[in-house]
Length: 164
Image 1 (cartoon, rainbow, N blue to C red):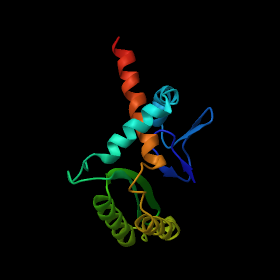
Image 2 (image 1 turned 135 degrees about the vertical axis):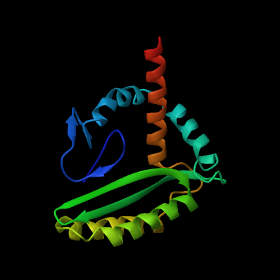
Image 3 (image 1 turned 180 degrees about the horizontal axis):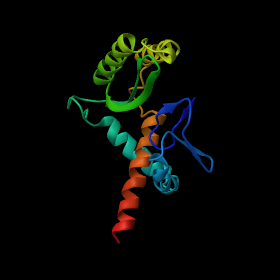
């Protein structure tokens, strides 16, 4: 499985390759410029933003942190068509658990109804269970939160450069 260098989604087939980066769709390579700018941002600036996000309130429920990345994995199938995706959610542990449980239930009900669904559904259910059992460290931002903070800073820097 590959992970999109832009949005962080996990995919098995297809995608686009630009230089040494892999992207999940045609729209994600457009973010390649943001990635190249983001890679030049000093690590301490990224760490400061990630720490601020980590200590802040949950964007979903407005409850207290810590905030981190909690991924959900879903699949649905209909005879010959199967769709699956992984989505990063920047939320508190409680909201992350609810989203993972909902994704697990959704996949368990809707994933089996196609040829590929029979193969992919157990994988997505297992990934949600693993996410429920292994939560991010509550005392420091995860690598995934650091990656998303770097992308946010890169996007902000790109916007400032294009305004001039």
